[in-house]
Length: 422
Ligand code: ADP
Image (tube, rainbow, N blue to C red; front, side):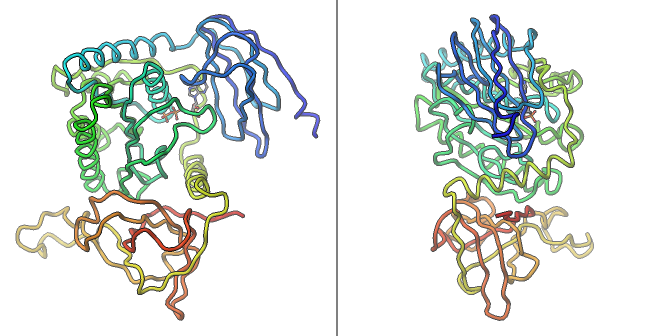
C-alpha cells in the first residue's frame, strides 16, 4: 500500500456546511464514512458507518443540515469545508414543488413539470439529482428527463431519455437504471442536427405525458428535466421548444441572469421562471472540449460494461442486420422535390452497406419493427459497438452488453465512437 493511501482525515462539519473533495488521480480510490450525525451527498442520505468508495473523476459534496463527523481515507486532490452553500435555496425550490405536488394529488391533476437550465458546469445535473432525491424521500415517484446529449446520464452520450425515479440515487453510481426510455440522437451536440433533436424531444415529451396519464402517483409527482449547456442562438430556441413540448410549469435558471431575463421575456406568464445561484463547488471551469471527449468515452465505456463486467463479443452477417444513418446530404433548393422542405434531408433515413467507416462506432439497437420513418422516432433497446468489419466474409463483429441474438436487427449509426482499452 502506498503512503498516500493511508491518509486518514476526520472532519467535523457544523450545520449547513459542506465538505467538498475531488479525486483526480487515475486508479486512486477515496473512501468516505459518516461517523456521527446526519449528512447527504446531492440529496442522498449517508448511512452511518457505511463506507462509500470514489474513484478518479469524482467531485463530491457532503452536506449536513444538522452537523456531522465524517472520515475520509485516501488521497484527494482538493478537499475543504465550505460554509456558504446554496442548499437552503435548493431546498426551498423542493418545498415549492412539493406544495404543487400536494395540490395535484388532492385534485388528481398533473404535478409540476420543472426544467433546469443554465450554461455548462453550473450544477444542472446536480440540482436535478437533489430535487429528485428529496422528492423520492417524501414518497413521490417523479420522472427524470435528461435532454443533455453531451453527458447522457440516463444512457450514453448522444441520447435523450426518461427514467421513473423510485428510490434515491446511489451515492457513487447515481440513479438505478431500470427500464429507461431512451431515444437515439446520435450526436454529442444538439447543434449537429437540431431538426432531429427537436423531433425526438417532442416524441419523448409525448411518451412522458402518456406515462403521467396512466400512473396516478407519478402524475402528481411530476417531472424534472435536465437540459444541455448550449443556451445561445439555436440552443436557446431548443430550450424554448423543449419547454413548450413538455408544457413546463417551472424553469429554474442556474447562474445566468441573461438567460433568466430572456426566459422571463419569452415564456408565457403561467410559466414560473426562477433564478438560482450555482454552488461555489463548481468554480473550477472544466476545459470543455478536452474533458468532454474523455467523459464521453468514460460514459460509453461504463454503459457498455455496466450490465456485465465482461461484455459479449459476437459476429453477425451483413445480411442479418439493417444499418441506418439518420440524415442525408442536403440537396440544392432547385433540386428539391415538390413539397419537400430544405431541412427534410436532416431526418431522412439512409440505409448503409457495412463498411470500414463503421469501425469503433456505436450503433443503437432500435425497438422499431418497421422499415420506415418509424425507426427515427422509435426508442431504443440498447447499444452495441463495432469492433471489426470484414467485407470478405461479410461479417461485422459487435461488442454488446448482452449475448447474441440482438433484440432487433435494425441498427442506427451514432457519430460516437468507443475503443475498448482492455
Ligand atoms: P452541469 O449539469 O451543469 O454540467 P453538474 O451537475 O454535472 O453540472 O456538475 C459538474 C460537476 O460538479 C459534477 O462532477 C458534480 O459532481 C460537481 N458538483 C456539483 N455540486 C458540487 C458541489 N457543491 N461541490 C463540489 N462539486 C460539485
